Length: 125
Image (cartoon, rainbow, N blue to C red):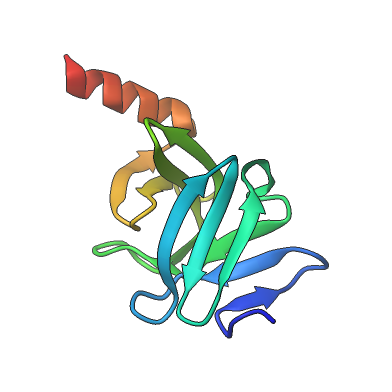
């Protein structure tokens, strides 16, 4: 049984509510799967299925309007990053990238994870 914050929606697509304190407690990348622990249960999904058969929604970012949902993910140096789109404005506004802890890593994202790689390279120079 799925927890209250994990909903089956849009056919087979599973949407997971990201609610600090009540929703996702832990999100980790293990053995080519993303494991998400919620308050009541844990679920695992194949890494390549994010945005296809499952997504995380309801992500709130301080100093940013509205809520966001995940459309893609990548693992770099054992850290999981999520590319997120605005739930209300969609592609009318730039995307953002958060890490597995829900921390904002990069905003004003126009080129997906290419922007993250460029940012990380610039930080090392």
